Image (cartoon, rainbow, N blue to C red; front, side, top):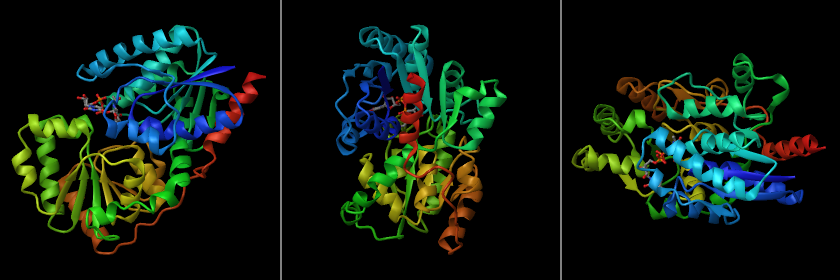
Length: 366
Ligand code: UD1
């Protein structure tokens, strides 16, 4: 049995790391393919170093794909992955998450007649304007093994007519990585470096096209930050998409005037984990951060109108408050005012998801 895993973006690296470790433990022949979708040191190499991921066996040079539209980027990546798969000839391909590299990897494998396993299957925001939602649906439709993180995923897949025997509820590999690194992250010096103290600041991440690609939406975000900045320090690591858009949309001047706003480069995994863990709350439009804050027990205000991760609202510390300024400021006031946002850890988010996945894959082999 030869397995190829395909990764390409920052959140993929945290998800594949525990699976790679399990393969090593079970002496399973494994090849790591990096599509190159994320190519900056701060978005890629740093994570390989911190998570002790092996150097990719195939590192496809696809930075040229980034400047293209979503559809062209998917096709571009798919063709690159196909070449790598023809070289490697695996029996199974693993893809994780919902980014363009995920669907490109799944479709490349499927078109070559190779079986596909999707880790983090079944999540649905039911918002077809998100490229990630299209990626999820397309990937799940052609996957042979669908590993889910929460029960809503099983339900969504069954509703879409996916056979029950292909679906496995295994828990959350991203949380495997978080639990493994939490102690180490506590030693990070980032609070000292940025002159922050425990619970004396919030963390903000923003990169979804819906929030930052269009001037009106981005200006709405800035007006929210102007209000929040009057109440608490905001640490804002800039994603490359966001950084570029601030410049092209001409928002630099207004941004720089916001009080209490600390703009930084993207952080590594350990520094960012430390920052979230010590923050009063997190403001985000990311998917994974909604899950991580739930496990850390840190309140999370999600700057979106929907989430594909309902368990973080039903059981965790996630507050889905839309992108309405008044609603967000009210939620911030509630948290700063001391209202206790309590949650519990969702089922099977216990650090053993990768072990369950590999156990299932080993049994299939027989
Ligand atoms: C991608 C994923 C998103 C995920 C996010 C995590 C898709 C459709 N989107 O969004 O789901 O949450 O990654 O970070 O796959 N860029 C750099 N340096 C890099 C990477 C990107 O400068 O290392 C630039 C690109 O040139 C491009 C922009 O950032 O202009 C966006 O990159 P892209 O890969 O299209 O998607 P992300 O916004 O990063």
